[in-house]
Image (cartoon, rainbow over all chains, first blue to last red):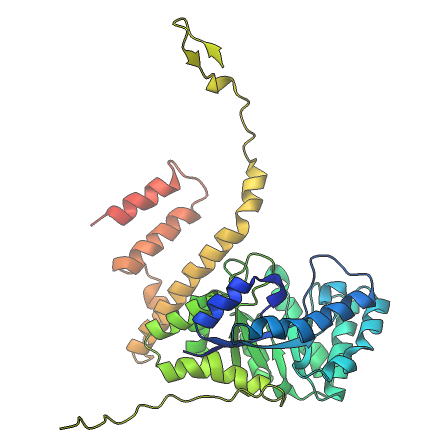
Length: 280
Length: 105
């Protein structure tokens, strides 16, 4: 089965992960800009990082037949450095021109401070002005519900195209308001700290499959890119058809990411051919 | 290592420094996320069961209420297990209590 991994931090992973993903059906990954594990100090550090994910990483993925796309952002954890954020944002348009950059992400909130909210608003604003897609990170664990509510409040005060915004890392307590407001949502599968494959399938069964993306994130922390395949297996084990699985794990990423014409992978449909006559 | 009365080498294991064990606070902190994850999986299992029970009853019965009454079979056994875990004090190891519970006919 063909799978698209819409949120994947490739630079934190080995080539062996690419190889195994290719062997298990992954045809494309999209890499949002991420936190480096420490707060970066210089705009140039971000620019080189954006070059890495928009210029070099596609070549690494291509060796395994995987298409690689990316996003640019200052991570919410670094939003307290307001001058750094402003300086990095000035460079976004040159990356929007790159052939595999899909938009702005992952922006969003971590502790939901005023500076974080201002940074989120600035990120969404520049994305909308340049016709880009947006990927929004919502906080983890205890901060999840409050942070998601604040994300929705910030967006509600802006003139945005909701169908071009993906609010990621939703869970059972945050999915409904995001879908009801007209945004795309993402389930991020982590071994321990976020959603699990079984819970993701529960939510697919409860809320349907429209405007829902499933991803593994897979960064430098405890994470596993193959939780996505685990989720595909759980979905199929519960009796959902191959085409239904393709809709969730391949076609939905095509529908959201394909709003940027640079993402040119098309939705697919399984066709069963009529039995061919046996030669006499 | 020293010699025994017969001259054989003896390793004085008990004289080795005893490694520090985790404190109660460290145990609470170190295993919190893992236990949180497992509890959420159990909660999802119960919700999944209730949703299916509701579907099967045509939405007439309240699956959550029906399943919440202890129930029978494997779901009932899980609810008993959760009740054992929720008790503030245990007169024996909880793992032993659960293994005995799950071993019942």
